[in-house]
Image (cartoon, rainbow, N blue to C red; front, top):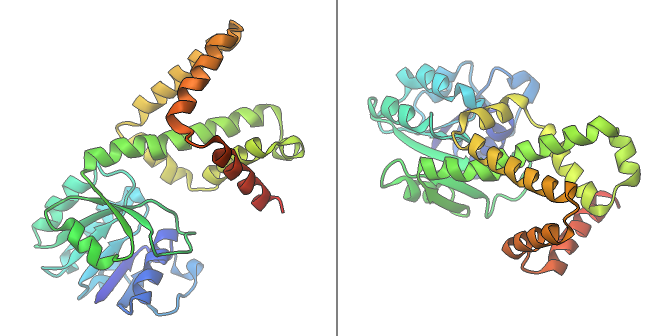
Length: 283
């Protein structure tokens, strides 16, 4: 299959370029950052995005998420009828509908995916990917392209609502945690006294903060459910603060137990995983 990867020098672009090369597809990449990203075995470089997609049966757009629509508009004149465009944005509400309309006018199919992992994933087998149902054939097409992946079908609204919890809430919680710690301690001071639990938490926060602020602001601001879940988090924190301020030990323990019942099936396994993560990062 002739494949083009637009944004082939970015993290996810490089990941999927390697994936399609490993399938022995004929893969061409384009990215204005190509010099900085270095060459990739088996990947041909094009001089422009238009050149990259000439004759391509499959075009994967891995540009920054806020440039997805713009990029598709740029390559639209060069897309052949019957081709398929894959977009991998992490927020679907403002992307899928406009993209589908633009591509349908050219007889081009849209496959909307959200890889639930980052480019550091080492094992392609079993990789988890959301498949947005843009038509009746989306899931079957995704299965042909990613036969060993764990594919999760859903519509765009369900996707954004779930990602409001799984991405937006997780990111903002870790940003706030790191921001609070930094008011009182440097990272070095924190690490000197850290416990396994606090070490894993700060590592999570540092992992979030190592990513692109542009990407993470897009995820927060463009997902229509982010504010709802942030409001729920603030309510939960405020409730705990009231119990602490009132020195209501019974109330605190009751809320603690209510929440733990919802999540902790095996307490030994849960805390064991924390210690394993701590020991792995502190050999």
